Amino acid sequence: MLQVSGFPPVAADDHIELVAAPDVPGVEVMRVHATARLWRWYHETYTVCTPILPMRTEWRYRNRLHRTDPLTLALMEPGEVHAEVSKLDDHESFRALLITPAVMSEAARETGAPTGEVHWRENSALHGDLFRECLHLHAALEAEHGALERQTRFTSLVGRLAGTLCHGQREPSAALGEPAAVRRVRALLHERWADNVQLDDLVAVAGVDRFRLIREFRRAVGLPPHAYQIRIRVGRAMTLIRLGMPLVDVALQTGFSDQSHLTRHFTRVVGVSPGRYRRAVR
Figure 1 (cartoon, rainbow, N blue to C red):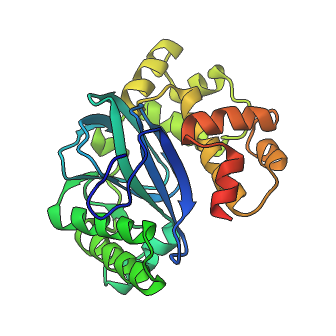
Figure 2 (cartoon, one colour):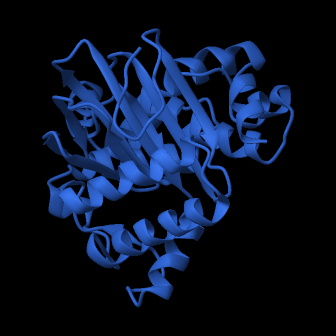
Figure 3 (cartoon, rainbow, N blue to C red):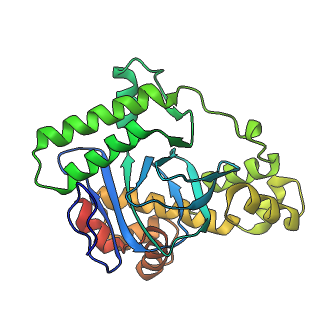
């Protein structure tokens, strides 16, 4: 058994779960204590990842390579993918907050930050006070704490995030050095995420040959185009599951051939099956 200060003991066996945050609407929590893996996730939420144990990780996000320090918060926005490229530890233990855009926008408005879309000023932050606040919140979400404490801690944390680490304008992909061909292909995949898109379709909008396209897309995004599309589909599937749609209909609505096809990809990407996710968030 592993004991981390402020948290209940964690079993040595692999444990991955996604649950609705108790008493905090619009938020889900991902809890992982497991054999280390390279996560590649498309985000439809604002995501704040907090390591419970120090992790030595490199990940690609918005055409940049990021590295963790012991107190690093990893910050991701909706509509983006992060792809881990290396991990030096055999096991990992972390918590992630998945916060809906509506919750973040409301927090920004109430704290006087720029309204509209909220964007992280940094994609990883070495910030001891915020790190400790995240740990205290997750401990409250996992222990026998009352609703008032959970809601207060969450409100305080999100208020600080909105006021400290956010600004109102997204840094353009061009400013990050993302090739124009990759931007055009990503736009097409977002527009036609449920379609059976062909490589020739991507080449037509990219304006470069298929070899260069695949090479530049993987370098910029961290994934090849087909894996990027799969992760968009899984993100949409998570939304439909939260809305209560039957899994067989979710599969058909998100471009998978059937429920078993959805289950295979969903489990590989998210770490839990669609059925288990549905039970956790309903």
